[in-house]
Image (cartoon, rainbow, N blue to C red; front, side, top):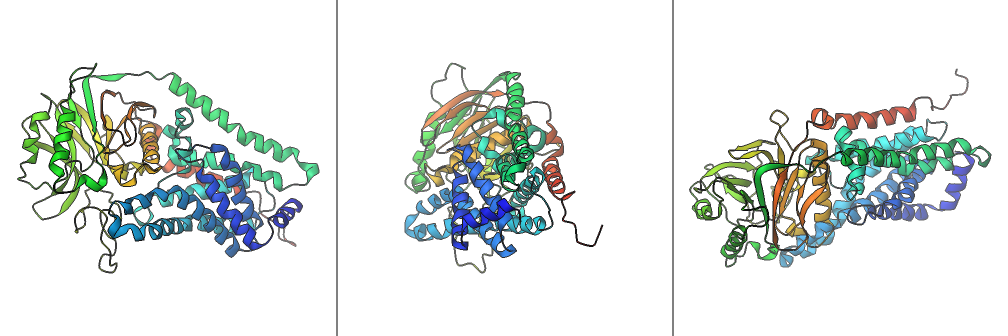
Length: 522
């Protein structure tokens, strides 16, 4: 351990002070997330975690401190999950603190594992420099990737999402995805740690390394600004989408005496006087905003035909039960005759929301309407409907899964994300969800049309710019043209592999040439 690292360990004091510091660092990092965007807090937060790992006296201490950081980071970042337990408060309110703390504690295993890995590797490293920071950033990014698929995955709030209000800073994800931007973000905001690994008389080299890492910020912005600056505002001719946001409170959505009124309200909004763009050609409702389970012979689609534009379609969400008795969370496309011309079934279901894992063991029910579990659809699929460019349908949080939102063998012209964030009230959740849609638009080079029951509904172009929006908990409609798509991006061709490769190069860079020499060996 260097002299400065030893001083740092002394300043941090005893193990309880270190644990408190780890928790505070995790909570501090939450301030950088949407909708706060206090991005400079990442410097003390990530640098603090790195230095705690660097000065830990053992792998157990490193893992515990990493877990406490994650408890703050994930607990604070995911607190909005608790709102879902207040929709039916009589049954579920008591589970709210258990769910929020349990979610944070479980997800914190990733940061604990990352801290353990970093500590184990760094024991063999002779000097602290920017390469070691790249090792730290690479480990963070690889575990962010694992978090996207392990145990069905929950890649909410990738580090890249801290740039959600700056389209210029997000443009690089078209090259290497959100994972690549997460790596660069971790590298930039952890770089000051190298200043603690050297004697005061030898600070020139580490200072230059910190400056070099910091220069990535203006470089990312300049490249993104150039890309956005050369982009037009082109739209598809002859298409006007009407997005309907009825703002139906989740507590009322499935009440027997109110359901019919909810549908009638949306029908009236759908038939509202055309705006400056003229009559809408297609009308879109949110996830499960027809609050009835539709069976093969259901009369509901035909009763909705009256609001379908001539030559257009109505697209809406509703539960669907097939001939085998299976229930799906589905998207329906109906034509002017009320005929169901296509459906799409949600394939990435929410644990405990749409199905109960280990149902035979766990004595609990899911939060959504009905006792039985939903069945999963086959996966991403491009919908084809005459008069409308082909689109990739994704339902609710399926939009957070980078690289798994479109069918790569049948590239669509746009992405439609219907969702219901009414479960989460006026929390940070819906705002963070919107940022994920922006990232997918840039990654795939495709516009994303997002229709939400209580908001935030938006039309996002292929550069992640919000063209039209209805705010959270507002009732209203959007009449908007459909932005054009771009040529396939490098990400759409190679997926997450490029981001993973960058992370692995960071790990290799941190190890090669920095191993401690063993006495007596050349």
